[in-house]
Amino acid sequence: MPHFFINTKNISNDLVIIDDKENYQHIARSLRAKIGENIKMIDENRIRYEGKISEITKDKINVKIEKQYPSENYLKFDLYLAQAPLRSDCQVLLIEKATELGVKGIYPIYTDNCALTKSTIEKKIPKWQKTMYEASKQCERSAVPECFNLTTLEKLIESNNFDRIIAFCERDYKLSMKEYFSKNIIKNGEKILVIVGPEGGFSKREFELFEKSGIIMLSLGDLILKAETAVIVGLGNIIYEFSNNK
Image 1 (spheres, rainbow, N blue to C red):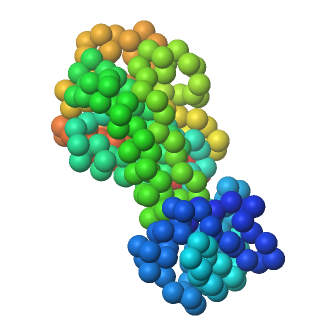
Image 2 (spheres, helix red, strand yellow; image 1 turned 90 degrees about the vertical axis):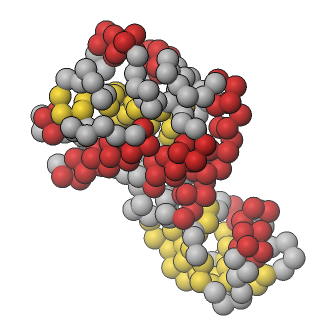
C-alpha cells in the first residue's frame, strides 16, 4: 500500500482522521482497505506515521498511530529540473522518474525545438502535477514536488534563483560529468537546476545563451540518449555524485 499525505490538523490523541475525499476514495474504494490493515502516512513536517485502520465510515477513516518518526526519504540538496516537454507517454514517464529521483520541482520550458505548442503544454500542467502526486505516494516521498507554470530558458536564467545551473548537451559541451564533479562537489542545502532539451536538442541560439550566461554544459557520455533517458541518467548521476562526496 502506498503512503498517504496528511495534515497535522487531522491528528488527535494518537488517531489520524482521514476525511478528505481523494484519500478516502483511494483507501476505501480503490484499495478496498479493511479495519485492522496497516497504513503509512506522512505530514507536512516530514513526520512519517505507521498505524492500523480502526474505523471506516461513509465519509472518513480513523487510523490508530502505532509508530512515528522523521522521514529520511528526501535529498539533502534542492534539485530542480527544467525540461522541454515531450509528446504523450514519454512525458508522463519522465515526470514519474524525475519524481522518484527526488526533484523538488519541474519547470516546463518552451525551447526553439520544443515538440509541443505553448497552449498544449499549459493545458497538460495540472495532469503532470497529478502524476507527481501519485508517484510521490508510490515511492513514499516526504513531500510532493511542484510542476511550475510554463517558462523560458531566458526567464529561468535571469531569475538568478539557483546556486548553479547545469545543462546536459549532446554537443558543444565543455566537460564530462566526472571531470566537472571531481572539482565541484555538491554541498548540503545547495540549490541546483538541471536543464534538458527536447528530442531535437538545443538550437544554436540556445547554446549561445548558455555560453553568454555562464551555464555549465556537461556531457552524459558518448551515447546519444532520448530526452527522457537523458533526464534519468543525468539526475541519477548527480545524486550519485552527491552521495559519493559526503
